Length: 626
Image (cartoon, rainbow, N blue to C red; front, side):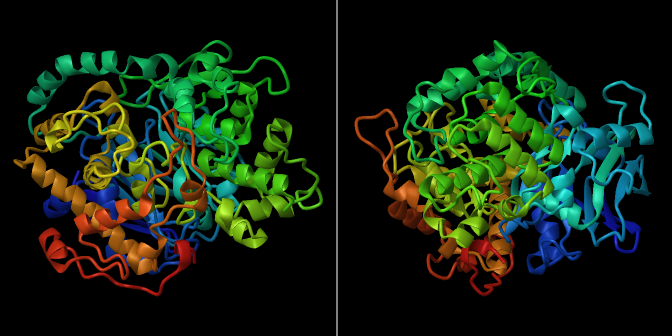
């Protein structure tokens, strides 16, 4: 579309900026474009919860086309949870609407003097009062905003709505932005819902009917004709059982969180909360994001018991793990209730579950008593206490809940529990263990937003997906420490351009390779570029985010693993218990990247080749927290 909508909530004004061809070629879209724009805005110097923090919302060049699994967007800002680079990805049905409304990206700055929502449609912007929506959950907000802006009632002609709930309003530092109402797609990680709340921005509704040229649409459609069938067939496990399908396998491999990452296995748990268990108990159907042909989303209904009445999107692997096995809760209805609370109130299910898991361990160790927890018995597996606490956190209800709403690391520092806080840069671990997949140790430590399994996707390339274009004819062994540093570097560059083009990573489980995506890019844009050119764009984007963090005061001193991952060996189903040789792998990674392991400086020839500025080396801040 060639247009970026820039909204200033303080003044209530907006302008349309040009997305030049040079910007599109260098930064692609999505979080790549966000990295460029936020650097230009010097957002690294902003207060994450202040009006000077700028948010960038951006789909990619594939949005609105027939490319499968491409109705996705990213949101970027300085994170209030970590104090460093913040980004999160989301599917659903929002991205195509922003593109068809006439814009390749949305920038939001400032702070409204009262609650508002944005209504963007066919090149127009309205700033509407949202006082009547403040305090409502995301399900109610979604439906009411959609009703207010009008819709035809048919999918594709209804407005896409992204909104926050009470958690974002109350500045819970892991507040999420929710899309698609009760179906519950989330801009989950890094606390970007709290950034919206700090701006008095309740929701953004988008709808559009505009079209745009595709360089070679017949060629694209012909290329995709048979490929779609292969994707559906190859990824059929995700379609049948959702992302929680592999839980029993993850347990055997020692790759999911159990009892705040203390326990090796949980034999009695997997079959009670897996994708198969959901299918056999509460499943009602499947949910598809826009342009999706896999359908990993679930819809569920709980009809009886203490959690009867739940009717919403079903559990995914990360949510099930952090709110199930991590808390030793094997009641699938209770885990679904924890998911519903997070989605309604607008919280990242990963950080929310991790924070409660940390609190349970602190309770178990005697660092907390009932008088500290506002009367809750935080014993392992106590789902009644967990659901009550989750609700309190999302509403900042009570002193204990308010403290937990600051996130695991801040609370751990408060009570002296940093030794068992499982995080990087203040971002809680997702549900994949670096002791089971060595590449994740390096990937988590060097990810810009903190512990992040998606920034390199290396654990997938160490198990089921090959990358023949980059010399990996077969998946790399998960304990291959020598190969892991380069695999992480390649994966980070690859995922940086992939996340900027904005496709769902589950394409890789459908047999898609980087060469396929490269072909789609040329069909859509008409740009005659090589795969190496695109990979260099990914490297540019990745290093630009590193520059952002250095300017925030976070560098090699934060490229760490929590003690539990380096001191407590885990049974991962091999001959011996496992710990990743972290320091050696990290040193090799720095050598490959040409980064100084002490100062964080990046080799001048790397910056020159990528066309990036010199680093701004700010005062060091432990774990990036302000």
